[in-house]
Image 1: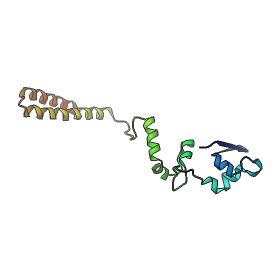
Image 2: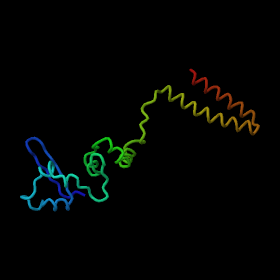
Image 3: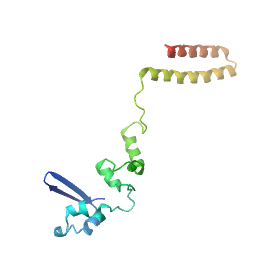
Image 4: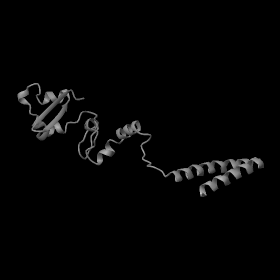
Length: 153
């Protein structure tokens, strides 16, 4: 976990870096003369590629779980697979589900509702016939016919 937070402003550009205590000590941050944020951001690969034990990282771009959580963005297409569990958890918290269903035209949704109801009634019809409840079966048959007419109109 990052405990040292550094910000460098050059002109109108601001660059931030967060380090754990171990990395900060390795870079000599306690001695301000021995540390250069620019070297760290641009040239020092040991810190850029430093991944803490157990931390998830993308095998393609090196983006880490911490990077994703901090920025809310992914580094490359492979990150979607690498961080899939984290993304799924976030989506479940934000939305009703993790599968985008899009909008459904009202007429189609209505027909789909009726089709589901018809299937259930057909099962009830089979049961009524099997139990020799013919009056109940006739009522169910008529209800199915009404729903089929509603779908056609």
